Length: 76
Image (cartoon, rainbow, N blue to C red; front, side, top):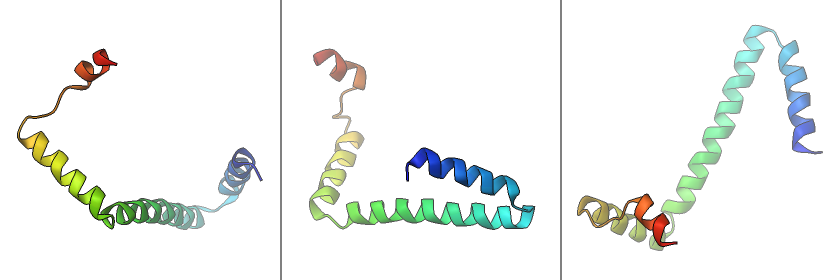
């Protein structure tokens, strides 16, 4: 089933829910959204190369060794 069809079906169901069940549905949707974000974060932080790269980027930023996006964009 297409995403747009699923979204339409969700809206129809949401409109029919009483307030308390709507709150529960929103809580569950927030849980699913947060869970996905945490899983992605965990996946990135589990990769040693990515962690080292992020640490180098943070050190470069603190030391002022970064270029502004406008300067980089002009070079492209």
